Length: 203
Ligand code: ADP
Ligand code: 5GP
Image (cartoon, rainbow, N blue to C red; front, side, top):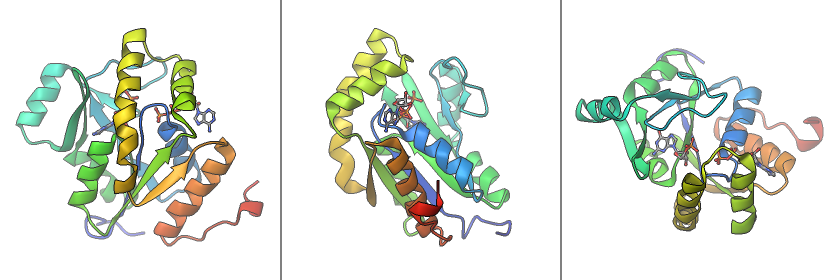
């Protein structure tokens, strides 16, 4: 793929409620499809252990995030949880397209709709669906990254987020992880016109 992807680079948007498995699936796609690069979002939330600034997120203070909204630096941003802002910097798209790669996003349902509307025809939106609400909440609890208050916010928001499924191009059910990862790879390869590796060859 050549540089100058501003006109031909594609966008893969993985969206879902918190705990559905977006991060796990996005990591797998980045490990298996060389043509992809991750859109590092900016956030005003604090880093989790093992998260790295510039790799997982650009961690900004609330003031800096607000200043960059004012400056028009974001393609989209959302207050996903009360006082926790997340957004895609315009500079991030330019950075990745300059590398000659397609962009993969891990963003909330409203941000996903926003990206879809900015790039119709070049964008694949995939909604990751947990097998049930109970399993979703259980995964979120077992991940042990959230305080009790944050867990409560995420669970209450998930109810609404689950209703967004029909607005996206495709749904990926994340029940048995191995199957979901294979299906994700197949969907993305097909969209990028890359060879779709048959399931029996992937093991
Ligand atoms: P998200 O990025 O959507 O918030 P994560 O990728 O962090 O979700 O997944 C939430 C938790 O569930 C993580 O601890 C992850 O290891 C686990 N997980 C993801 N997919 C599955 C699955 N199919 N079966 C069991 N656990 C899963
Ligand atoms: P977390 O705090 O679990 O990393 O992310 C919380 C939520 O914010 C997830 O749904 C995640 O996908 C979403 N998110 C992450 N980055 C962005 C972004 O740039 N824009 C929007 N709109 N949502 C984002």
